[in-house]
Length: 459
Image 1: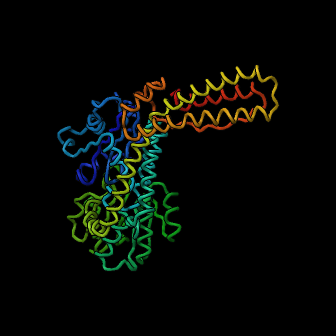
Image 2 (image 1 turned 45 degrees about the vertical axis):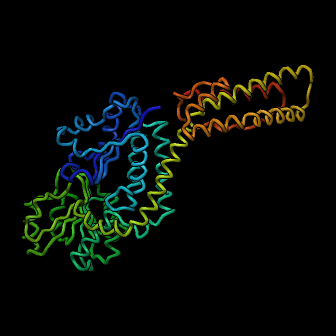
């Protein structure tokens, strides 16, 4: 089985100046993922890139496989600059980190719901690029299930908070009230939609929306009775806004110092607030030097988020305990399914004995009607299943306890193949045939065995 490796940088380990240099846009993500998959030793992989983190998750063939070189080469950043900010987790720690990220326990705003959708998008992108299969598929589905449990079984998601809502809260604290304030949403992504919803709840006045894709801007503006602005009129319209919330995917700042000076001149020095929740940043930090212009980027939002962390400490504790249980459950299942080929082999052996005995007895019993055949089938299958139950349970229990010595001993006792290099796939469920003749029963049994081999042992 491949080893799991997760490396990355996030808002805790790297400043925004570095994070924006390695941010990967949605359009660039498939190509970057395929480039990662082409690295020596990488068997499966995916990349999560958000405003707060860039993380690589991979199944690798050897513990010596080094993914940090991919980050250095792909982004053209000197190793000495990036290395101090990179964290790396392997196997169980990688699983635990992924589960915490998907559950929003590692987010800037603990409990924010957007990160789960972002992880799902990254997984879908990797799927479309053909870089994930059995091992990461199983891991990600388990991570989504763990995140769902955290969301539904703890209070961590109560009073829903997101980066967008924190941004709006910051604006409200600065203005005192958002009543009647004109808000300009630059970028029509999920963050902008969330910001618009919170702004309306806080009594904001006119909402202006612009986006490079005009239709997307219309879709965002419609529920809020917002006014759609062609992107070509971005700077002309920005003058009208008291608050600008920008979250585009532009690779370079779209608001610079000279723009701020023009805005102040046209607004006769009435203040403007820019809340920049994009990475790379949409607003040049130099804008903050213009009198009357106040710029807050995503790292500034962390100060507001800190108050939420304290409020959610007890809920986070419950969620951490739940994550620990889910991580252990994942590893138990991972070990358990690893003995699946041995269990299938055991079933095949027993079925072969049963079939041979059926053929031998068929000649002595003569012609049987449909009911008689069904009764014999049910009887013999029932006996086989009862005899197989103890050794199958023993194998599963030994696997859950990670007792490889006992697993090997059981396999040897039953002349089963070693499970050392088994592939992690669940056992296909068996269905009971309804034979009308012994020949049909034998044919269907052979077909089922072939299906089982394809599902488990044939990989």
